[in-house]
Amino acid sequence: YLNVYVNEFSASEIVRMVIVGMCSNIAAVDENESYRVIKWEEIVQLERSGTVTELYIEECLNTYMVECERMRKATAEELKVTQRGLEETRAERDEMEQKLDEVSTKLNTTLAELEETGAKLEESERRWNETAEELKETQKELEETEAAKDKMEEDLSTKLNSTLAELEEILSYQNRTWDWDIFLSEEFLNKTFTTEHSELLHSSWDDITDRLVGIHITEEVLKLLEHVDPIEYRPWSMLYSESYFNEVFTREMAERLTSMWDGISDQLVGVTMTKEVINLLNHVTDKAISNCGN
Image (cartoon, rainbow, N blue to C red; front, side, top):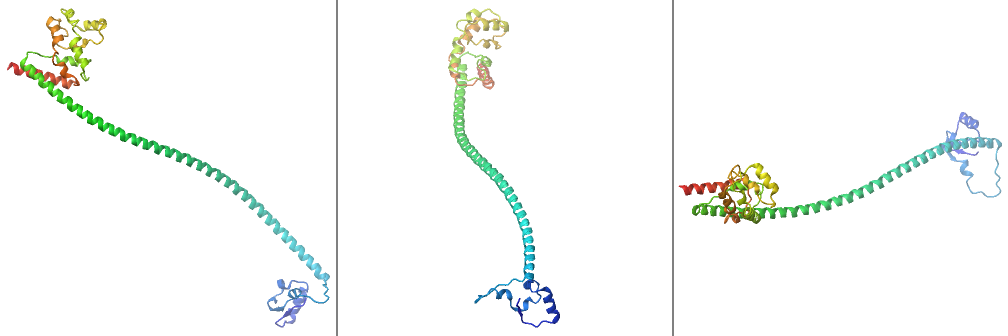
């Protein structure tokens, strides 16, 4: 093939070019490639005119076929490598898609859980708000109850003081005493004295005291009376007080039971009969009696 170089070759360089042969790929094997200024591969690309016949030299054709076969095998090997890479890439893609599906499923599950958690959170917040509102209302009611309790205690304290003052006044002018220990019985102890209690003190003994005169008041007798008495609310436990228990019931005791609370039991309505209050009533009575004796 025709090639023109800018430098002059030595004999040995020309020999090497001849040995390589005219069918060789000059651009690939020629060490003087950089000196070529007119290149055959460029010449054959130029526009042609007249009659041009392409001539294939057998030697070059064989060389060309060998080179093509080599390039085919190389290309086939590259294709195999590329196919293996493609298969690996597809496998990786499939694995990635599977992982992506798993991640997507987990994400959807997580989103569903988040929505459920959000709903539960909203419900909890709603309940908390309701509880907080109820707490406010309860606190308000408690404050009102405390205020009412304080007012009631103040009123009861005033009433108790008034009752104590009346007791002292009655004791100053009348020779009367009261068996306050009666209120230690279960009908009255630690209970708020009511109008029903007052009526009970007045009327519960009216139809029975005369029949008790002469009877020795013992625990066995009281249990028997409680068992056979047709009146459900008669306060038999009052007879366990020291004034009656283990004593022979007298006419004086009968009159005392039916009349001792006249004019005073109504003043006790609303008072809680605790041991402290009963002790205070006994103290006021003992003090008034002591003052009368002096």
